Image 1 (tube, rainbow, N blue to C red):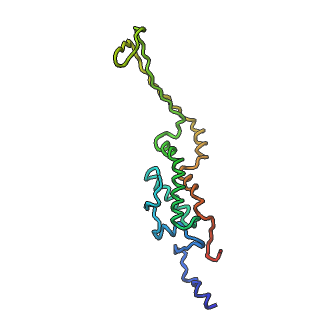
Image 2 (tube, rainbow, N blue to C red):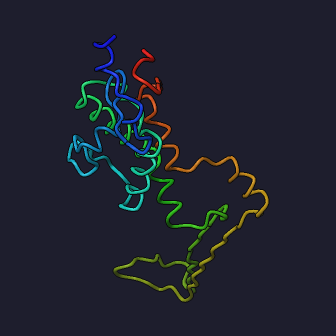
Image 3 (cartoon, rainbow, N blue to C red):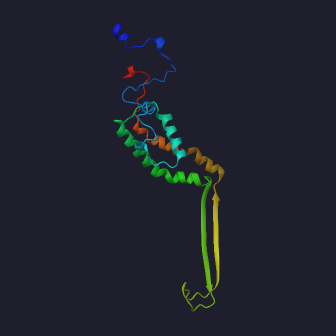
Length: 188
């Protein structure tokens, strides 16, 4: 029993505020980030993000969700390559949506723009040529724009079902992490 006691710290030494945690099987994202093994600024971790604001939000959301989750792909460099690959895959799909959200009114359903020109000639036998014979006697330009705003209540119903773009990215990388959760190293 004396030998076993040397591996188990006494209860009075345990502090619940202590952030010392080690994963059971592999290594957690939090351990890698805390120890500086990986950082979001590393060239190996660079993915095609939309802007710096989005990068900050998404990396914070990833840390919030996956800090204590163990990597599902080893070694760490292989995980990093797979992480960047999945982030780029999802951003290729979501980039137009990020552009739309940044530049437009989300309540807008459509925006039709038309521009045209009517040209008439008092001399119908003559052809209109831009370099030689331009006998147009009258011309008029038309320009119209029709913006349709959606019904507020219909749009809010759609937004209730909407999952944020950042959240879609965070959900998309879930397979890169193990789903095994434990509270002690004796659980395995």
